[in-house]
Length: 308
Image (cartoon, rainbow, N blue to C red; front, side, top):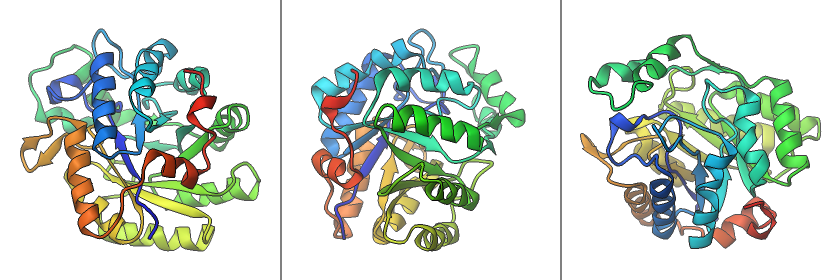
């Protein structure tokens, strides 16, 4: 099997500061945890910034630039910027930071979907900031909008104009169909890096049958021209990632997706999760890819071609 790519999603836009004291949201904490995750074995760092005042999700260019140069100076991991931002943001807002930074790689959600976070609000009663509970509870009427026109716009702005390659985030089987559509239009090119996303309410449940189904469909649609990775939200993170590794796929962990390291035990850092999945995949006989190998496997333009 090819070397395995470990992605670490450092902070995201779903979990809020009150949920864990270890969730990084200040710029220095995000940067420090990202660098530590890279040193633990993550070849790719999936990055969102946060507002440094209250930790709310952000895609502001200045907030991105408060973390990117520092991370790039201290490690050689591939910096993969979110174009998803938060489901409450308009497309122009979500793209502002990535367009300024011109990264090697960015994420791209492959469709419009419900993005329901509100069940999490019932698990906490003490909120550090006044935006957190309304943000979660309001998601019972929240749609993450990424239409075909939106997707084409991201492909043009980030891919054609800025040379980024994509992590295609697929939350259900229809997102594979959409990706095939853009491949047929000539707007994306192999090698394709697919991220199968499980456990978000509105997308696929984190069940083994769903992973095998997605793999069968991807084989049919893309043949030898793709690689797949798996992320699963919450307690399914490590079981689903382990299954992906055993199937020849790649893995994603991080506090964006799951705040815990064991049942009822908060992860103290992103690096702790990376170390755990590295131990698992190496026990399965997989060798962890270096950042240089990741760049070669994904066909990236190189860290010297970014704008930070």
